[in-house]
Image (cartoon, rainbow, N blue to C red; front, side, top):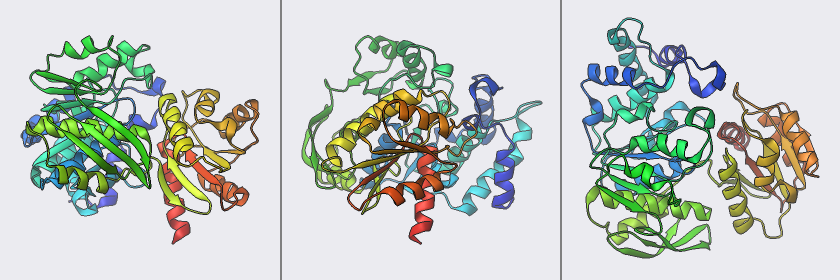
Length: 436
């Protein structure tokens, strides 16, 4: 067996499209490599029922909500999400606990020995290997149910070798259009690819013009947000949200959710509908309350410090930035002065993103590069903030940006770290070191 270091070095020798600019990506969308892999592995993707989650925003939180609901019911649940914030182990978890270093090294070693068997010239991508690692680990444990979050799009995503009983589409926005297409219909067509004939589709997207695109995939049932399930009441509560929820099977009143932002109430409602679809019956009321109180979604409106209040939110696109700004204004904005620590990737319009994040109301924007080859220049982001009439400063790293923000912040200020999950992950790690 390879050591963890050698296993990760082997993994990193493969094309990692998460770290590449669009015009430098060499591998065309294709499930052939993944199908060859699961054939050689003995079809681990068929070892347990699955729930498959996609969407422009909210899919990681929804996957974690589904996991919390299923584990509260006493099931062993495997969860595959992306990207990670601090450690790659976060992507592959069982019952909410990341895969151990030893287990990760073991499954990667097995995949390293198997890759040459896939055929001449067949070389997996970085994400395909991690997807295979999750499939293999879940089958070996084994888990009772697996929850898979799509990496990009859906139809050609490596996770789509899974034949899921339930598909969840949180929403359809214009992100990654260089891969998924220029229109909402194009993006919807890619995301609809995870819907398998005979499955149940939980559809959070409310644009009725997009619905036929999903229906063409021939699901057995389509549960629509607002019609078949949703939040009847979604109110701010101390430390989270207070929800009244409706599913096709029943209602749940006064459920306290330990997440911030009204959009998280919608994500939990979709997760609850997905769990009900999987079991074919409503969940026990007490188990739903337990799951809502225990769910965590790091890096999504996560409070990591006080005096000043420090909030991490990886709003990575325009829709996410708008949701973040609305949540911050509702839950944290009263009588607080705000400092933004912002870094973002290429392909985002910095002025639009800053406007959506509510930068005009901030007293300072501290721009930083995201720790990714795809980062946008901190100087460009700072210049965009100044054009909005906001005082701004460019820094050379996330760590330096935090130092500047804390030096400027008063105890009753809000420091919001946002713009990219890469920035949030680096900030989370830096703040953990600082606390230690």
